[in-house]
Image 1 (spheres, helix red, strand yellow):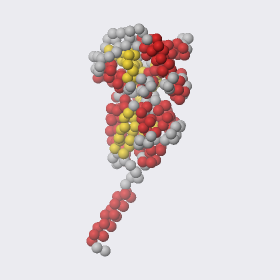
Image 2 (cartoon, rainbow, N blue to C red; image 1 turned 180 degrees about the vertical axis):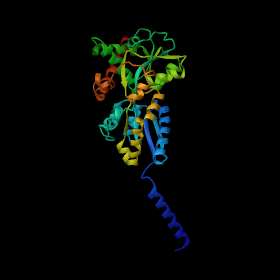
Image 3 (cartoon, one colour; image 1 turned 120 degrees about the vertical axis):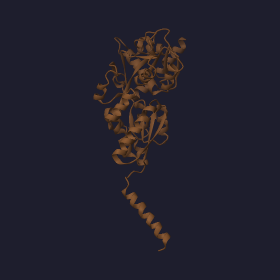
Image 4 (cartoon, rainbow, N blue to C red; image 1 turned 30 degrees about the vertical axis):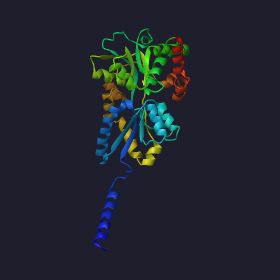
Length: 339
């Protein structure tokens, strides 16, 4: 056996020994396909998880983010774009991915709190001093009030806002479908431009100084106030919706990439005390009741309802309100015809 052969065999033996002693990970990169509204938050969460995983396993993991509009993420994942987990704006978005058999239809049951590690609600962002005296949903339908919001046909967050206003009208004494449709029609009539994204709506209101009130997730509104406390304040309506942005593991993808154990740990860690505290930093209501109680001064109490309590399941809700020819299109047609 010559010297070169012995050298090659020795190197092969070292490689085998290293592989034998290495953790059985096929991939050390995790991909999270997320709604773009949470870009900054997940940057911090990923750093927190990487540190946790290193201390637990000794392994260095790289988390890659793929941010886009929540509805766009559905199409991307269904078309085969790689992702191990998704963190989207509404449960229906993940339901649509499940329809392609990328994960089970019962995905909600696989994590705590119906796979919602943090939540929000819909509130109003107004200018400091509240010059238009916005106090509740009917004020958004008042003549002359300029409302800023995103389009529920394209924005997952806007769907929560639409349902919050519609549900408020339905739950008033004597409320019914006809009155609810007329109520939201008046709000849309006061909305001069429907932005494509929720971030676009916030920018229109805060950076471009357009509008009297922005319909926003509480988390977005609280961040805007924290960044410019002398310019904005929040109005909490008398009633709103529980906005539940869900997360899920994509079985087909993790089995293909060999990342199931890592992806599961990534999602499980969202329910840890450290992660729950981080979500509070970005003004999300934590799933953990004790953590939520700790920040009672930050998250004002209000009367809330869940989508299924008022509208039924998300598939039915989407068809009724957001599909072509649904309630959103109908009230817009009424507004245009009346203009």
